[in-house]
Image (spheres, rainbow, N blue to C red):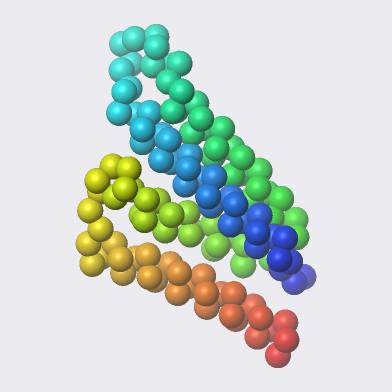
Length: 122
């Protein structure tokens, strides 16, 4: 089974939604207070669950049209999105280890894609 472009696009959107969900959760937990009922009405937490759920549905749809060994590792790029946006939203610092991790994730995903193309066309 070859991985379709549709599956690749679906998993890319999945990573965007799951990353958005994680960022919204981070915003939501800043106001978290379990002693008040309003904690359960936290809009950021709720929207984070919605975004994460949409991401899960997109990943499931991507599995239908793609190889698991290609589609699932692409989901790891959500770590890249969060790492790149967290300094903007939360002032998190990127250091050499974090940049190396981002580079290794992108390199690994690229090698998987390249290896898949070689098998299909080689």
